Length: 404
Image (cartoon, rainbow, N blue to C red; front, side, top):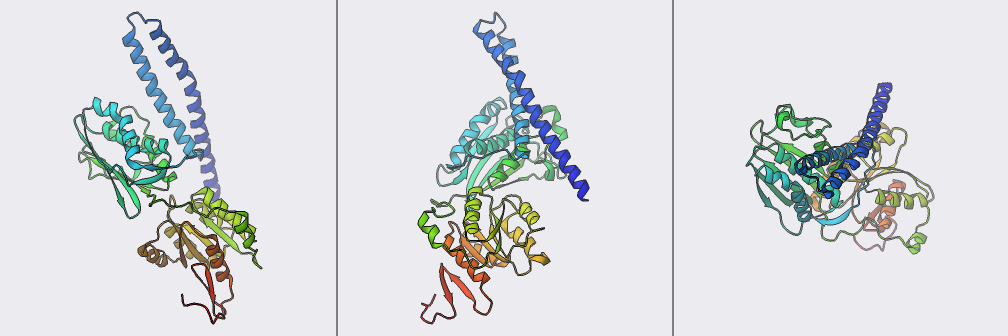
């Protein structure tokens, strides 16, 4: 089984490399074609305006297809670096509508937008998130008969920004629903008017949404009933502070290495947060492994036995609750201490992480001293239980400890 998996992985990588190379090679001839059209126009193409327009339009269409090819291979090779900023979802949606407007007008669709101008903030890459929503809008345009109705809604639901794009178009067959986000999957019945895509648009939508820590879902009651695409992204809740407090040499001096180091697994899709936490804990003499998503974390524990796992909840692919469940089920990790790191601090969130098998629930931004306390208390001998109460260590021996 392992040989087969390796062979499949190599084949997959070869395909990704081929797509990337193909994309770059196809790009080369497109530039001179477009430049030539531009020159012909400047020289007053002498009655060739119509032909120039056709060449230009078709060449631009090719450029878009090549961009899709390159995007898919970049995603597959992990080469997409998001430049995230704090954004209002309304701004992104209006940019996406701008991108899709030529098609909306050409097809004479009616567009209804129900999005609050402010108050729905996400931490996202403006270009990439616009691309996600523009892809979904363009899709809705393509698969809806002329003069259709397309509707965009955005709302806040349980600390998530939810964006819904619905159309009254051709709908999706039930057997097709699970596959629409796969590469090269396309509704066959619509091939005559698919608008000439590669079937990569939705694969790119899913990859980019997951890179943002979000999810995308589709619903259709079947052919002829239209479809609804739903994107969920973590909301930025009123001026959320950075994940960790700024580090100054003073905070570092106070952190003395523990007598004994401890194997710790950190799982967080925010690379900077994971790495800086890892560096700090390494300085404390712990043995650290970092994973940026659930599957990698489960891969790491095959040959690493952490005593403590610090898990972010809002992970791509599988969330922290799921990862916790898998870790709890592994015989060699019996007694592992699971600490949830999350932006969600409501009582219901704490209850949920408790039910999912977490021992502690820390809300971001996490105070490094509290993490230290938790690690110390976890490692403390069972006969002297140490409890971390908001960063103050309370042990059985302190008779004058204030009631917590």
